[in-house]
Image (cartoon, rainbow, N blue to C red; front, side, top):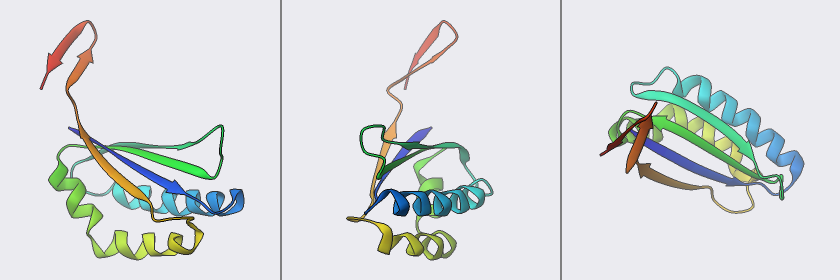
Length: 106
């Protein structure tokens, strides 16, 4: 499993709200993609112009297929004018996962 962290630095609070609407469209489509597990959208409490998306995917290959898909590209394009700078994407793999009282190292 991997986590994908996408940071969206909006130009204004109003633009951040519009970006969140676009993120909801993206999530609705991502949920239909192979390997998608879950996602959440967070707003920085100190700076509400900063919107963070954390999604969980079965494999990096699944994320990469979605990330480069024509559908995602076309939906994402709508947020470009709302961003202060380009959004950033980072992929993280699990170093340790705890389920109940058991820890597993990957």
